[in-house]
Image (cartoon, rainbow, N blue to C red):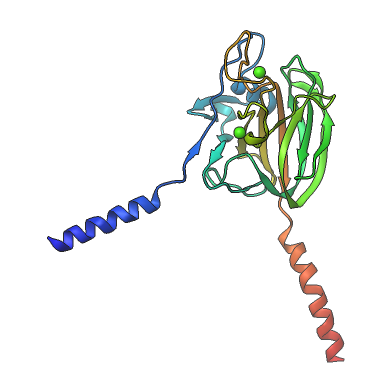
Length: 248
Ligand SMILES: [Ca+2]
Ligand SMILES: [Ca+2]
């Protein structure tokens, strides 16, 4: 009996230790204004596939199958950095990102306000581009080497006002204004993300308050892993050369 109790308490300790970190995903509302696309429709417009929802994720169905759109956490108590190249779902919230070369491209805009996309590495806002166009016919893109950095994404009006950060605590209303999906199954070495932004302040309460539909600005992020073979060559070459010189 005593063995059994001991085994049970050991199991309890194991189960407690294995509990996942506290995580949460911000709620996204359907567009309040009927002429705007929701997330599923925006995904279909961008990637030309037929998507279906599964919880807060989406997957491509029928002939267009193969793509998985995985919603990441908006918050975890790990307080960790989301690695832009190789993050897996549940590894960190989408507030602080790190470590990779990025290509950022505007993909959609359903907003009355102008939209500017930027980052903040801790030393102020650095503008990447202004967005022009409306719906899914938009343009604006930039590349940046952020392989040694951590940063917050920022969206604001093109005159610099009404800034919202991926880091909730930096926002005037203390609320989350960006939700994140990883697009899996694409025919590319790149890690592909979509960032969906809400540009209205405050909690849900249309028509006077925010509609919290997170479709005001949609930005795709692509990140390429550093080619490992090249890195090895860079480390290995001087060693080989030194040996040759010694051997002479
Ligand atoms: Ca978020
Ligand atoms: Ca909105």
